[in-house]
Length: 136
Image 1 (cartoon, one colour):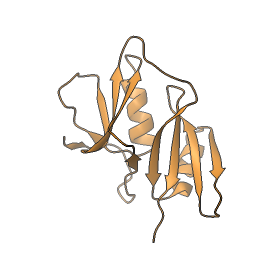
Image 2 (cartoon, helix red, strand yellow):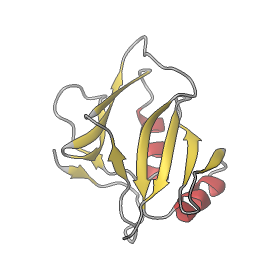
Image 3 (cartoon, one colour):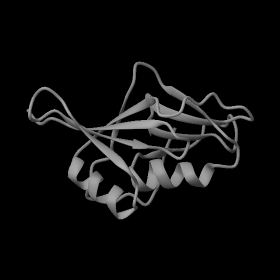
């Protein structure tokens, strides 16, 4: 799978997907543009070239850890359930993008002062958690 160019800002590191296995997300058909705008444009997740399975299937992430958006007539969607966790270089940068795009988000604080994350709703009413990468 080869990366596909998207409108991500070149100076920022791409978000990283965190999951046990590659993730398949069922979505309603005809929502390709919404997926590309949210995950590729707004969040900056790298898009991968498809695996030939379906022209409407979109892949984002890295070769061994990708999220596959699979269109189907009756997608299994649980509204407001966190399904995807991304680690980003800067929560402040993502927060600015979300604010500029007028997207609603929630700030979550953990037990330590440095443990923060944002929750945002994707175009299919599912929560995406954004965590800032920790530098050692």
